[in-house]
Image 1 (cartoon, rainbow over the protein chains, first blue to last red):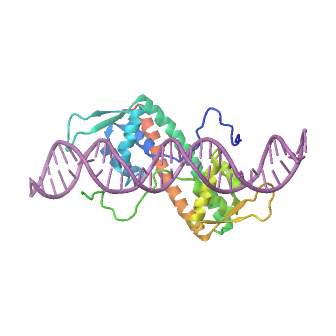
Image 2: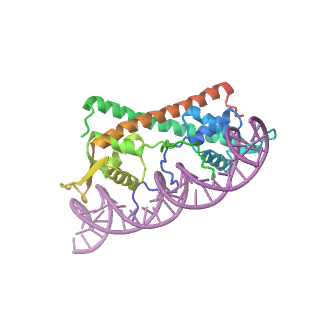
Image 3: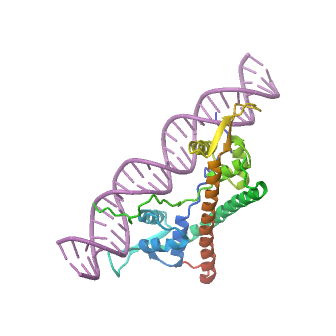
Length: 129
Length: 129
DNA sequence: CATACTATGTGCATTTTGTCAAGAGTAGAA
DNA sequence: TTCTACTCTTGACAAAATGCACATAGTATG
């Protein structure tokens, strides 16, 4: 039988890899509504350069499905095809708050790792055993 | 046949999700050789609790395939079945160094995100637009 | 018309995670 | 002995995320 590990009753959520795309998008939309293409540009400022556009558009649509953002077609077309403008919902605003907590946890984890590394490098002079 | 795709030549994939399991394992093995089960325990100190054992063992096997660690069966069996003891290689030591750089980058990204968030929360008093 | 740039999307193969189950060894209780 | 609990590792499969090629479409320039 199994019955090992922590007895999982209701919550099955374990720790996943730290995700930053969704939090970053939510944050940018917290500043102001925007369409995917411009978000793509703004992401570079956070070090999220060179990611495939399809990922951003996909993430936006997924978040709309979850009700974190809503989209409307921009009436005034600047240049190019019509663009879909996303804006944050109240729910999305809450979710963003939760994401920041997750990010803080992640930062703590990374800090502990880096601290341990530099510590051990000083003591052991870089030798691995 | 448009042959598009922002014409970058090299395989330049950047990390979107922050990975911490492998760096953590390498770091622990930088301290001393160990077997999977004990690594599983030690990971809790870094906040990596409640993850499935299979993930740790899988990560270890993958890293061995890449030559970052090597494993031998422990001759002296303490209690229980034979256990596979992993130790870091010189290559793994280098990789660990590279991982720390990646972690620092990730940390910077998270910092920028959190800073932007708190900054904007102060100014805008929590209103999302 | 051809080309280039803006803008959004789909489809699919591959890779990475997450979960579950099970196998195998030892120690101690019944 | 047999049963149970604990240690330790592995395999198989499902679910999710990612990478990439391709499709579509408007506007502007030459």
